[in-house]
Image (cartoon, helix red, strand yellow):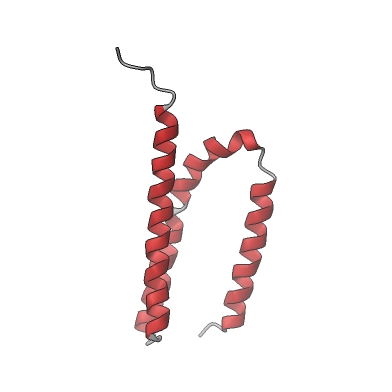
Length: 98
């Protein structure tokens, strides 16, 4: 079993690393990169499904299973919301139909 302190350390390092990566991207590139990152956000759903499955199969408590289900829902909202914003952005560039 993985020690919880290791999991917290991985979370902290990934948070700091993600912040510094996003901070270095120029603001003009945020919108084009967003559509590509939406596809990669699907990995978050896969990770949350795996984590929830491990919590369920290893006999984890109800709290860990509920947290896993919440992670799946929030990751799905992130992916679908990102694609919705990208779709709205691309509609701005469509020529108006007469």
